[in-house]
Length: 325
Image 1 (cartoon, helix red, strand yellow):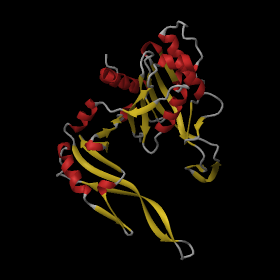
Image 2: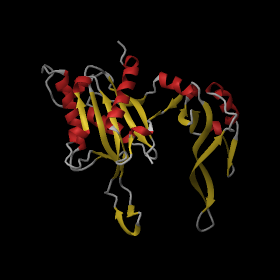
Image 3: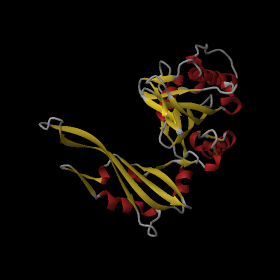
Image 4: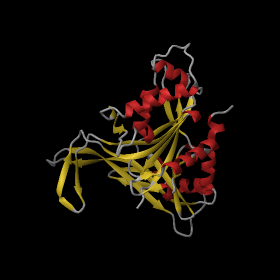
């Protein structure tokens, strides 16, 4: 069975500096040095590649996710992650996963033989990444695969910040959802379900049975709309108004669903479900699904040519919105 993957897009915002300015400053290149855009771009690529191929994995104190680029079977690092300097694109694979946790691994055929993995071990998956960094621009784009169950976005964000931040500048990543994709979600889809998630507290008696102790619990409420009576997206406002007034009682506390921290919905269209976050003023934030036929099930990664073509196509669709003339 293929791994369910989605594609998320982020704007890389450099502030007042262009990629060229940042690369010159990060590499102590004199301002008067003349270089072609392709030469400058390949310096950026080299910096990124070096950070991912050092002996120890890239880590940050701000997350328990590590990043690396593992070479296997005689692969070259610059073929796993590749510079396309003529189009300002770096694309390919990156290895990322959790560390600082104790885990046990075993063969499914014989769980009696098992190995304990210590906190210094990193268990990784391979993700597809696509960076568009126009040398003369103050804005770039990150396309990043998100797999079900784990999101390495935070680690990649911190990694890019380290690669691009200078003493007198700061960068930020901002989720970007093309309006064309939002409209595609709305067109012809029906509202399937809602999920409301939050952290709630409750007082429980401690082990001695004397003093109450406050505990935190993750609470998730899923509401499925009846089959055959699912409205289209245009009625979302009315549905949420009704559901938002519903309450859940947790101990002595009562909380409206509209007050829950995370509110997600799903649209169903042609037997496929599309998940979206519900933001302010019902501004939906859909993910971009990746078709199962793009999955290489033997090695649990996306097929390189197919996913690159998809990213190229999306980039062409949004280029004028992101980089106005």
